[in-house]
Length: 295
Image (cartoon, rainbow, N blue to C red; front, top):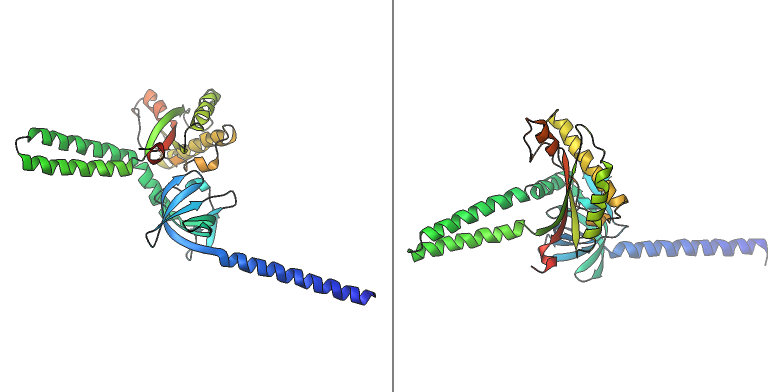
């Protein structure tokens, strides 16, 4: 066989391989589906998506899943984000392939910055809402006891109590199983080594809990500007999160997005040095979804 014929055969084989590769890519692209909806629940590497047509879809997250925030006037740019940003209440768009009729594997997940901010505000206000509902529930019970002789009024109060209890259950979906508080010096973001063993012990305990999630929230005292304190609280939360991820080997899918709470929710009097020291903190909690716990 002469050299010319060999070149023709090699060229034909190359064209066939390119055609096969393009066909494979086309088939893969046809299998990708697009979905939009609200994250209803999150458990590690899976989440429940309430789609725009009101059905629930199980979404599997993998190490290859790309997470991004849409940016720009026409949402044409994407900022790569951590998987920890995928929290309940966040509205997302995703591209995925079907695993079963009600289960998909996510290739990419995207969301708007405004939607993430709104979901984080809902999560941050959950504990305050819980306290308010407990207060309302107690008031309704007191009215019920005072009006026992009026059966009709008792029934109306009981209905109000049941309604408050139902709302309470929707907002308070997690048990707090463990908690560690890390304190910081004024203006500092480095974690004192004495807290490392406590954080690692919390991480090990968390791994024994079915469906656990870890919540990290950073705070600051009111010393200095509000903008500086907001950044300090964020940097402190990130420093503690790094220890849990790198030394505690906590999977990223088990971490909720770190919360930067700034000067909000002080536990000490900011007019005193002792109170300021109490407010410069990061609170770490091990959470378990009540549905997973069987409640």
